[in-house]
Length: 181
Image (cartoon, rainbow, N blue to C red):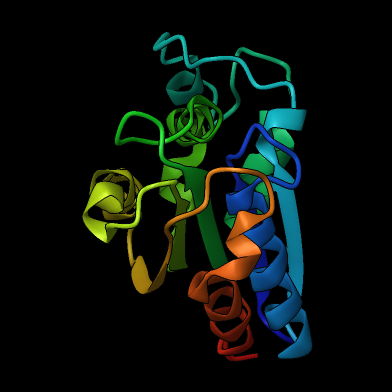
């Protein structure tokens, strides 16, 4: 059986450009024989971290009873985690950042993962996306045994679907296909 790939799409727009890149990455991973699942975090009920540290006293259980417990379990079980976000003021979408913050409850269990990063923006320059990617790398830096495997820079796409006309669209499929099963 192939690697378990978990794709966390931080786009609030279903079918938005970063979300479409996630779909292509997933299609490639499935074609490579991997198990792959995409979670659109905007469609989940996920509260903000309250910094109450209840999780530290309760073995990783969060005081909030929402969809994050299921996402955390999938993060723990995955071999590969893909973090994807449109660029919002040079950073992540609030939806993806909330997932990252809430992972604190079981962060010690999220270990030995391969990470891929996907960003999309209207601007043509990759440099515009570097701070967004840096936020994703910041999370991976806190994951023991994390290994960065690739970055997809979806540049030059503002309107829904414009990403299909950029090199990043094929790169997303190819990168997903390259995940070794």
